[in-house]
Length: 107
Image 1 (cartoon, helix red, strand yellow):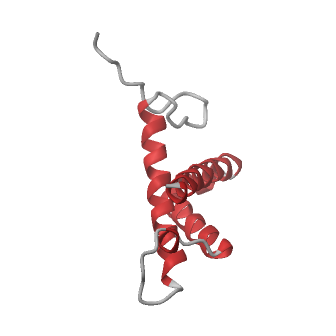
Image 2 (cartoon, helix red, strand yellow):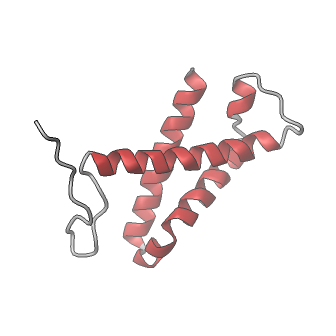
Image 3 (tube, helix red, strand yellow):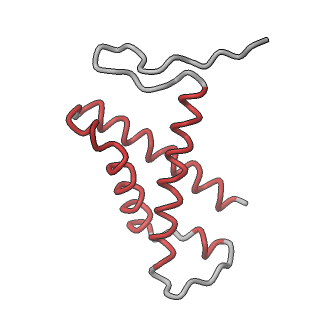
């Protein structure tokens, strides 16, 4: 279970790092998804972390574990982005205004 928590928090860290890079370099905003995916793959391969080895799942080759874990981390970064958007912490445009409105919950 700890392996999933590590991957989930790794996804959050990648998302926030991508947000920081887009804030510092606004020209990257059009490629945010590709940037997030590439950073997730690079980070998991760099630290050689495999979620599948942690759960005892055998893959054909050992090098596939970190690469597949990178895809999972990138997917979880997208999930974190959706959660933040639902909570009203969506992305802002260059003027500081929110791009999406928070969802209203009917009482």
